[in-house]
Image (cartoon, rainbow, N blue to C red; front, side, top):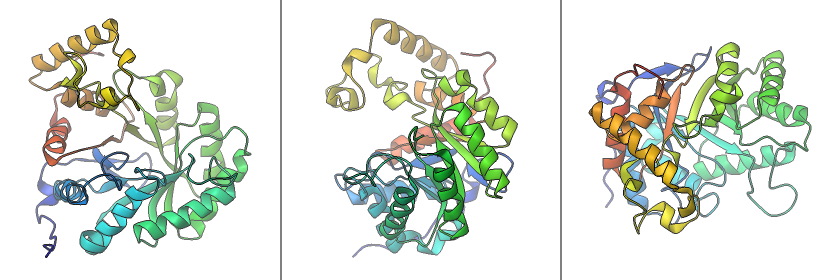
Length: 323
């Protein structure tokens, strides 16, 4: 018989810090839990359950999902639905749950990109899988160069007006499209809450492109996904490619990416982390959090021990110079 879950009474006194999301009423934990990996149908449910319990007990109130997270597609949201039924329904109002639509989800012309039909149908499916009435945040998961921006954005406005989402976000939109989105949404009284982009010590495109400056100017939050560069910014690859690593499987990380130049950079970063009495992963997460305009970092976790280590970034020392 499964034990009932009772959240830690000290969950908001266990070291988590919260950051205001742009110019909004929303406070997000500096570390948020991403469901991209480790929460699909191929993963042990009890491990997923243990990780989410640990996260919430340590102040992580934001769970980040998408329609096609798994594998298989939709199964991460189904895991979330089971967690809601078994553990988290009494705490629904303490949770900030996000989902997204924009990438391939089902066959045919209406299961991808940014049409009104796809976004609305996908969110309805997501709500059923997660067994909730609304999401706190719904994203356009990617920019669609073919669908008129007005169609995509008006669908997001109407989703909020229908009560199916409280806030709207965009992920990986180009700067000019993001500016258009912010203006369009603001004029319809559904302000853009947050921008999700890939930012880490190896990939600084949101800084270089001006996305972080845009967020600061517009009062939009910023949340970083892949802050550890799919594991490159950990100690996993400092001595080559481990046999059981994500890179050895070759799906999202390829072995040819680990060039001598990159390895030298990782080792240099690791030396700096050691001088700060931190692991490379802790320093990499702290570096993202210390960038101006960043609200939160999204971390994945395959164990509570890994999540425990990642949470140390919240209290990490500031940086004296730019790495």
